[in-house]
Image (cartoon, rainbow, N blue to C red; front, side):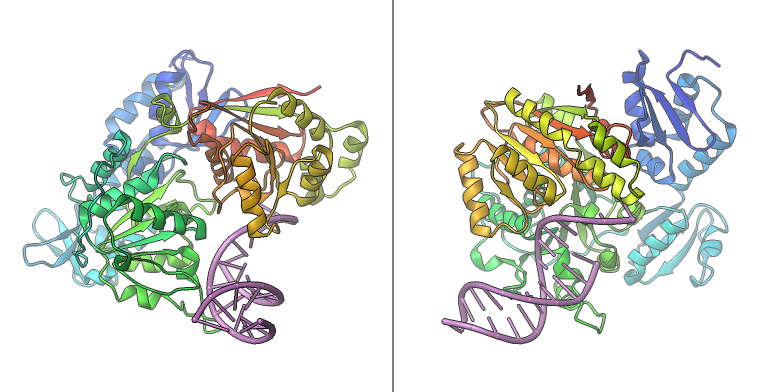
Length: 546
DNA sequence: AATGTTGAAA
DNA sequence: AAAAGTTCAACATT
């Protein structure tokens, strides 16, 4: 027992981390490995240990003994024994269940714990034993559903069942195309032979770090028919462009399966929406059938955290196909990370913004939260509003305009993006500053024209609605100002900051401002959004206005 | 056949 | 708990 330590570990699975403690930097990597950040109320950060966080840690090779020793060493108080016992059982679970192919090519679910299979799968058929282990033989088409079901029961499955070969294609990288070191590491980690279950899993890389190159490299290593699924039209087109640009594919070997042209080819790119689209009324997916008919050797899920729940079944069917999930954040707002884990695979590689920034691959960000109080009139009005209206009122705080002027003046030589969630508010900013505004209603050609002008520095400041979150090729900028954000999702923050990080030759530093009305609903939401950058090892510098 | 408009969905 | 944006298919128009 030593009160002079950085951690406080509680029986309710929460870990309180003192960020001002001299040992904070030493302790942080391990804490991040075994738990997830949930709140940062002050200089104390709160993490939570869950089954999933432990299994991710197992995947990274951490063992219970180490974790236990770590907690005992750095905790102010003796960690509760109930928690440690629970952790031990979760660590052990990671090693109990395996899927293997035996010498007669039968697929087996093997358990090293007696009686477990029968209790988990009472309807699972014959449970046999080979002396040491119990096992059940099952039909390979159940592989995905089985894994998902067992995961939901709280038991992850290590899948050594191997993969079917897809139809081969002749494809290679073009001459002179070199991967960045971390991109190569990600591919190697994904393909790792020694772990037997290599060839399926998730690679985590920040926006702007060239995730597509990881996919392209794997494409050319495997040389098999590949399905690429993207979240929207813009990234669909981006994949198409980049695959053509970096590899030897011919026009006949690659196609985009979208609303205008439904065409399958050895390399097919489509969107989640396309796959989940249902034929009206009947409730059946209209396109899945055609995709099932091909022998894919690899499926790439771009931004895999967006994988829609209706597609889980489709993903479950493709368990004997190699699959790569790409993402910048693991967090799903619906808390179904476990399904990604069991259907796509475990985390294979992760590189944070910090590492990439330090190696100059992306720009170096500074995040500032500016706290802007209401004027007297608005402050009084706030308390008269219903709870729903309060959030919006705080987001649209008129004082923010003054702060905006101040920041614009300060960065008068930089390109600036002003981002907000409410059209009314953005119209006001437009009227106030005179800079052009782009929203969802702005026609395509006009958007292009405005972006072009911004790129060529004919326009210095651009006002954007939620169109900025996804879906378009935004020009680079050095300063981002977030006037208001929607119901605090980490993903939103990730996307918006990602916009700024892409490295342009001109400047290496970018600044992201976020304007918040203190003491309101908005403040809570904002702090939830900020978890994203804090997880990445950044601080929001808080400034009071006025 | 290529393009534009509209409404429903998630 | 809410507003904004995207995308599909179907129909309408050249």
